[in-house]
Image (tube, rainbow, N blue to C red; front, side, top):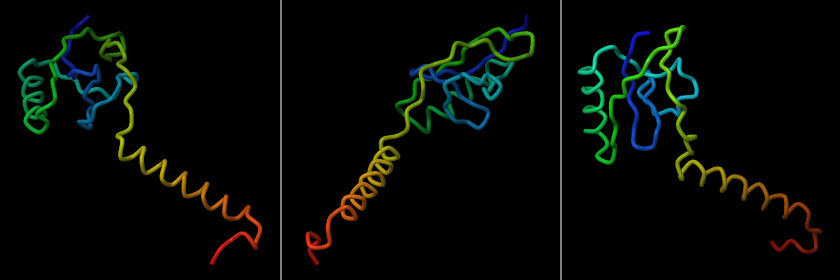
Length: 109
């Protein structure tokens, strides 16, 4: 078996080929390279854009189909802003439902 490098951050997530952090369940989309110096350069580039990022190249074996053998990290949660937008839209829908359920004489102009 040969070895390759993937990049893992402090949360246990992996860098994808699209330069996004993923949980690693789909190993086909993970960024990989055979060269440690290339992996270090990618870590440096991402760390310069995000000062809170703590990433490292991770040496791992490949399975028979050429995919890295990594343990899936924790599920990635949506950012708070996206969740807030969903909650706002849901609350507006419930408010509309409440108004529609009131009798006409209880609705004030």
